[in-house]
Length: 437
View (cartoon, rainbow, N blue to C red):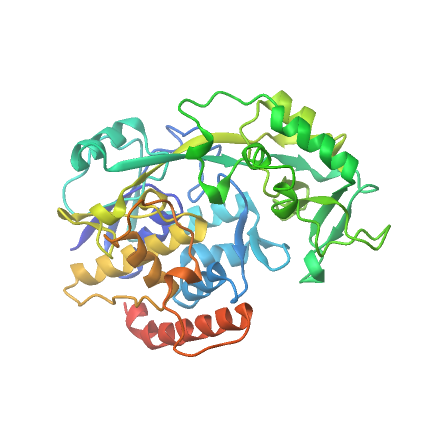
């Protein structure tokens, strides 16, 4: 009987193990929690969301919305659990962090074809193996990978998580519920700042004391998850055109857009915990409290978790991997998740999904699906494995890596919507073959 060892029960590893098991493959899923945890993990659950609780946009005019819909139609475990535990977040798919991870864990542990083995993996197992140990791969396994690849073939950058505050500590006399441009339901708490308040906040943010993170430099930060203080240092108005953008969020007290707005998003289904959107940070904890409580609505905020910074490691995938995320020099070894250079929760899930589907087919002697580049799933795998990519950096899914339409469409949203419809039509033609058990 065919057997695969999957290392790591994060988003990618859990999705991969599930897809393999659903196709009759016996899976040994190795997870070092709860015996050992990384600095970013706090629970014993699989698929733990370490940073935001948002899987980003759920709209088809957005590339990550398309990727989610492709996975949804192809029976992704992660997306099914996310849909089942979603919390209101306007046009985004956000989840109850613990409810989501708990559901994934229960699904994985109860599957008859999956055997969970707890404890740290320090050697690369024999046979077919999927390494989905994540960007915080333990030092022992990372050393084995370095020896496997040779020096110079792994890269790293620093990633950061945003603080969490209790809802009851937010001053709602100074804040209001709204979604930008009234799109969707008014699920975000908006904390307005006047010009004077913003400039005082910005000044303190740019000079606040940072926690020591070995090897950290601003240039090593991944653009898609940049600490708020690093962003602030790029200019006085950078935040006002980024996470503190006020456009489309008029203050009901004045009827006008404020000078700047800090948004809070639900972090659990009960609505008792909110996270500061876009406030990933590695400031010292006392500095976070001092500076962030300068925001009027957060003057008495109770911080349930402060922002943290951690190293993320990823591979020089275009030189190492093929379109199925297999190691070119040893195809029995496959990688999945953020360590391949896909950036984001949904992207990690997509890589695990593709690996699970294609590996199961190979083991059963079937031809690969070869998801076309016109699909988001296919485009991501082809980008990560494209040897013509020069300086490789982590990549979120985007329409720029999907081939353009063969005709002109007026308006970016209309064009993106057509790209999504083209992709989903292709997914439908592949669906029966992909779902075959």
